[in-house]
Length: 201
Image (tube, rainbow, N blue to C red; front, top):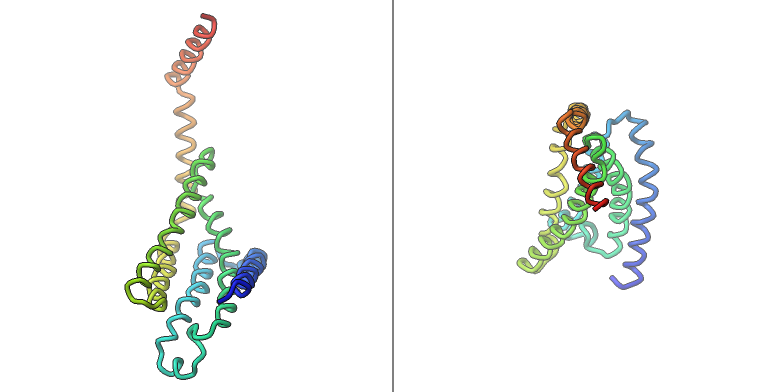
C-alpha cells in the first residue's frame, strides 16, 4: 500500500472510531447490556479481523483470489470495524475499570491503567514481527491475534463489578478510620510541630 492508501486507511479508522464512541452506548441501551457484556460484544466484533485474515488459508477462498486479505482494498472494511470497535471498547473498559478503584486513589490507578494500556502496545507488534521473521509470511500472525483478542472475554465475564465496588468502598472507609485514629493524628501533629520549630530555627 502506498502513502495515500495508508493515510486514507488511518482517516477511515479514526472516523469510524468517532462514530463508534457515539453508537456503542445506543447499542448498549437498546439491548440492555451491562458494561462487561458490552465489552465482550466489542471483543466479538474485533475477532472478525483476524478470522477474516485466516480465511486466506481456505482453498476455495484462495481460488477466488479475493477474501482473506488477498487484495489491498479488503483492508478498508476491516479498518472500519477496528475503528468502530475501539471507539466503544476504550471508553467502556476505562469506565468499567473505574468501578473497581477505591475512592481517592483514582490518579494512581488510572496512571497504572495508562502504563499497562500503552506499555502492552509494544508486546503485540513485537510478537507479530517475530512470527513474520520466523515464517516469512504475515498470515500466521493472525492465529496469535485471534487468541490474544479472545483471551480477555472470559476474564471480563468473571469479574464481579458489584463486589469490586463494595471492596473499593470498604477499603476507602478503612483508610479513613485509620487516618482519623488518635495515633495517626498525634503523629501528624508531632510532624507539623517539628516542621514549625525547624522553620523558626
